[in-house]
Image 1 (cartoon, rainbow, N blue to C red):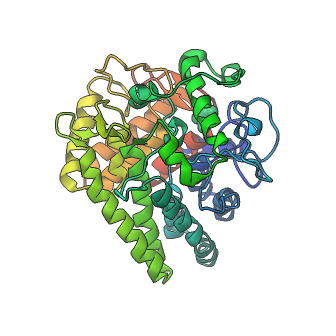
Image 2: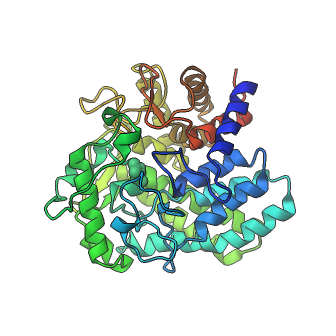
Length: 423
Ligand code: DGY
């Protein structure tokens, strides 16, 4: 375990560019939103100040309307597509124009709770609190205009689960005409069989071009987008962050932030039940344009357990993961292996990801499902021992896929080993 911890720390340091950390050199040469927040948890083990700075840097690029972009293009690098010229968001330091899972509220609460340097933690958390709250408020104002309690993603990249089977049907509504010619750079760094397809990339870019034509005006994007999906995993992360922000605000004596955040979490958790499927034993995405559930058994519906869902839902999700475990050697596949759409090497259509494992395990553990939580943690560490610090893994063979020497995988290994009583 000691050598794993040492290797993980080395990877964090090697990908650290001073004020932010790249997910991996080459494939992802900038700062990514949820990568940074989860990375900070690993950094805190050897440098709390550095961990806070990772999240501060991200929030230094928050938009005036409250949105926190999914990529900050701190410096030029033509090894990535789509770069700043494609997004064209008109910012001094260029950023993308869409967002990513709102894990910052959870991350700062965790840094705060564990901090050895209490004075530093108090000052940093106090400064970040209103910024994270503004981001949450932005979500509910702009991505839930009807006030349902749940937010929609408008682009698959927002979910973080870029090419999940969940989006396939809704993506049929996204055309590709008018997409300007482009050269993908990801295929220079990673195996094409592990990445999204060309057809998916054309649709990704069509949506970017649509939003750009609306001058990235977030008051217009939701209704204009032919792709509006309510993802239980994405909402689970946001609602967990709302609840954690409420608790953090209580600790800091910020009563209004606490009350408002708790109300957001409560309303969202109640609404989450509209996404539950008894037949699948998990939550499902909803296609907001059609007003229908999407019958796709992906890990998004298990990841919802990161939020404070009802205990009977958590128990059913734990049972479902136990069933899934019979079909794979490593938990948790990003799509049901029994489905004909399952592809064990292709990004979010089957592979296991350590960050998802960490969040599911954390949520199930809080819900009292400790045996399955522990099993996920053990499986995660075994995977890294056998296959190294990759971006994601084939859940049957354990083959490492995507990028190598991956930052958030390293951070999660540190978390799993330090926080869990692994046998
Ligand atoms: C990519 O480029 O693959 C990212 O996931 C988009 O954020």
